[in-house]
Length: 468
Length: 83
Image (tube, rainbow over all chains, first blue to last red; front, side, top):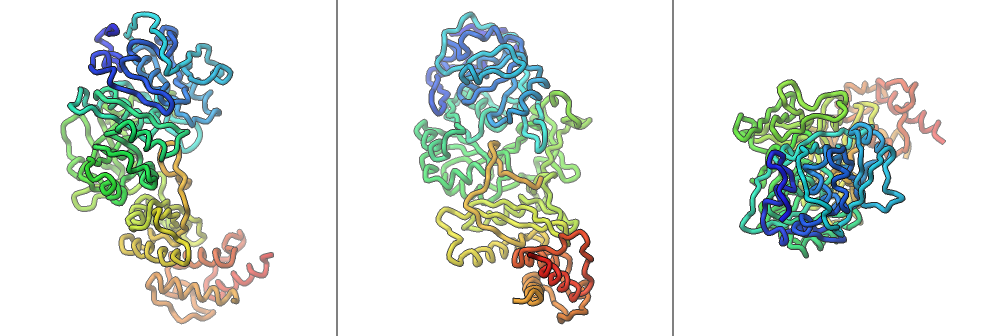
């Protein structure tokens, strides 16, 4: 067994070193797999760990497996870990390097492409493990920096610790080992949560790959016997379009990152009748707030009441606000606005509406369509459209208008079996608009519907919205 | 089909969809008295843009129409100006 680092600095490595069955627990990428037992007996960093001690390290690997291996080794050794999402535009890299005062870079790219301007120390990372060069010493509390894709300009850099990231995770070794997976990239909050659940909860993990189709990923996940799997509602809508959705038989299905409407919850229930299906509310800044497991959209209003567990919710000016030990510490480089208000509440920017004894998410504060002074959240209209049995997913957009400033229009993707061809389009459009008229005020009803074969989903797993 | 007929058809169609009682259509009908509200007019303008391929309101110097006759003229003038 590897030596245990000083107990005053808990790290991923120390948590794993104290856990059992490490040779049965696997991190599986698209091209390679590594057992945790092998990792703790060697190094993915080619013996360069000490060169990174105490430094601000940019984790800029292409592959998710190498990223996961480096994370495990570097937590508790690096001073700061900057998780570089795979789609970070090259033009934003200098800002990230300067703001995080990056001193070293970990990469799995070949030497000519490996360098980052202004960073002298470059360490390679590979799933072909090298012998560890020395006894591992811990001792550095590590700051974790997550990047959120700002709608404009530079990314926001959000500061977490292992404690704030893992605050919602119950550690231990379950009776039935879990095999986790996620459609997310682990360099994003939603994906990182799943990696940490696998590592701290005694499980294994199947990592996705940007180069792999949804169908291929599902087949690989199925071959590894995935038991717990997460994604955004958009990820799941796409997955359910694939015949390979039947290749997995999860015990636990999790949704996060976007509003889970009733239609996607029902579709998942039908596809995986034996699974526990939960939608979680979490954001990079606010951390994991709560899980809802009753199969219904929205969340019980009772969650707003003060309660234990160190997590408090409130609704102010229509938006959900969260205070907990899992919220991020601050923004790096301190952009314009602070992360939390004076009382420590993080405004999520997610607008909620109380109907009966339940709150429903209606959309993002910034994404509002203004129809003659009346506000429309695209997501609330999409939730109605998605309730039509022949609709797979939809995107509600604004259309400029000289009379009311804007009108609501919708792009709709139909279920695989349905088709809008041969004159059915007009009939379907009438049906969908009729559904909206029954459920929504007039100004929220789409004035036109366009049937499309697909909707763009960003690397974050969320629908691409241009109106915000 | 003439531009005027396109316009009148949309007035009737949108009034029906939006369950509005439409006043008898005549050139001197004041739009605000037509039974249609701003949302209905907004939808009519959007539909006409799809059908005719232009939006006369996009022109910076467009006078806002007061009567149905003004409204139709706006579209007829734009149709003549269109290439």
